[in-house]
Image (cartoon, rainbow, N blue to C red; front, side, top):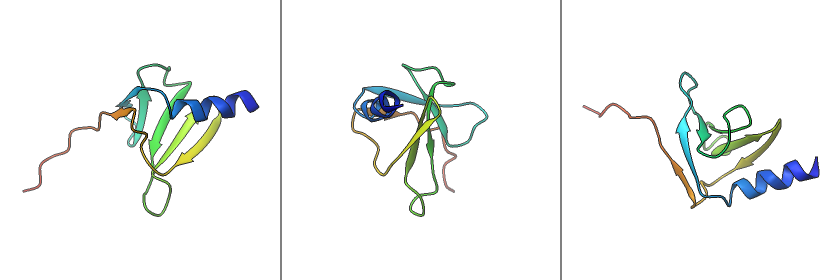
Length: 80
């Protein structure tokens, strides 16, 4: 169990690109891990932490997006 927790911490230091999971609002999978193994979820900030990382049935809340991460947010419609 301790090894899994350490891996969650290491994920924040990896250069990862996160893409939206189709049909799952606010959930993203990475270019390195399968989406069944590891994903992130954007929460209702500021009431909740900005992100939650899910890795092999473990979770970790984080307040800031790590600098090495690239998040490909879904296209938003322009405001009129």
